[in-house]
Image 1 (tube, rainbow, N blue to C red):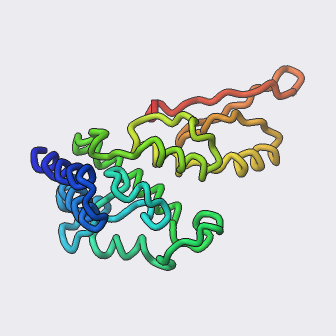
Image 2 (cartoon, helix red, strand yellow; image 1 turned 30 degrees about the vertical axis):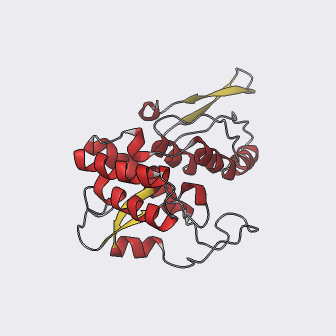
Image 3 (tube, rainbow, N blue to C red; image 1 turned 180 degrees about the vertical axis):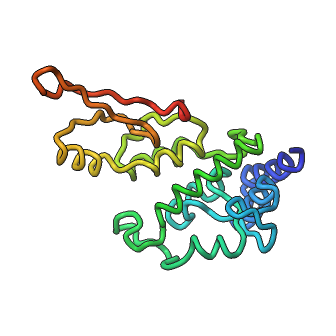
Length: 214
């Protein structure tokens, strides 16, 4: 743990001292690999490692140096997440319209990063930090208000945000099935139960919450 804290200190010093972005990114990369124990978080290979930005820094520059936006991947796993379009995003297009953000991969990487931290007992918020600004952007991109509550430390919140269907999609599916869903997020494993009275009329519903997230 001392080596992880030392790497974090070097990153924080570079940022606080106003060093060039290239130098700060080098410190960020060193920290991510140190924190992840110099192995691929996905396949656990220890060969040809890189620190990967889960949400691309070209899409969200404010997340470029946040510790919760990085994960160590081997060459093969890194190549896989960059398969297809990897150019600068057109910010006039909807997110992932060009295929560069790869939303299912983002969701999965935040998930396995959170799981890895829990298993290794390293889930210190400073080691996996995502600012309220970045999490707010994630929420708005998914169609939620920036103050919508998601449980857990920042990297887990990121996973749960990207695991959501957008409110518009959820509402359309519910309407097609004659349901009225609550506006609060439905987290993975949650179950929505509709109440029906003796006359067969719907009287509302409730969410049976997955205790894993609470």
